[in-house]
Image (cartoon, rainbow, N blue to C red; front, side, top):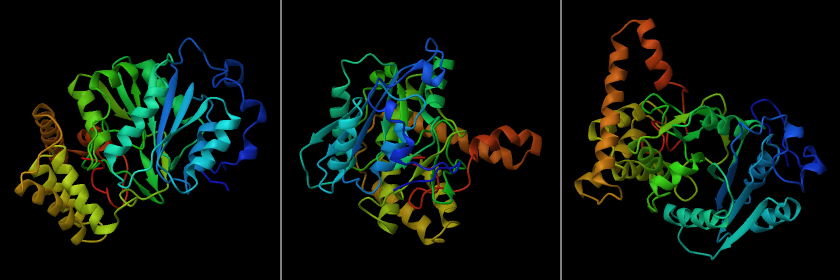
Length: 355
């Protein structure tokens, strides 16, 4: 089994040098890195029935020029052979560890937070600078983590970093989002930032990654997506349990739960109508949001976070409309921020997780 990344490089077990499989993750001779400037990192991967894709993720991490001090893969009650795949690699690479969680019937995001916390407990005695949440259905090129971790070293105010994702021929769309938002499939946190925000909030309906990033900004940290590196996302967003219109409706409900402004959501809905499936997709997204609003569903986030989120969204809308009525030269900084890519996942095409 192999996977071709953006540059055409194929991931295979044979392409991983045998001498790299047993020794500590970072070696300055092999990678020619200035160790005084390099921050250390650990990865945690909650995985529930990911046998179809997890080997691609494992091979991507094994090929990193700078590997993690520790990678804890938490099998969240998997029953499809995920554990066997991870165990095979954990036996060969001492810095990979499998943690097994009990089986559970429901699949929801609160369970994912529980699995992540189990992985976090497994690295509590390790001294590291950066902690990463890595999904079990993504792949990336060999310099991915070296590049992202290096951003923390360059700016001590950075709290969260990440890269955009690609699903097939479609890319993440920043038109109604923000370069400061960080996709949850591969989020890296400065350790102090993650501890200050209290980690991930266990919300069943989703939005845990979005809540964490906005909370970091609320507390004064910088957050940033760096488009120079891209992740390949192998499962279409929102299809792990629900597909099609059900996923869009749930996305709208999630937008409400994390505090999106009604006006912001209206523009999300209108924009989505221009994407496939035309009109109906946007209506379903808006229905999820406004149905939650009518029922006054209790939000799992604080009022301060809702106020902060809505203020950011209104500022972005002002910039967006200002760019429509100003000259091309004046538009460039705004456009580059808001339209970094032109497309996204089927269930999250407008503005990603929570906008």
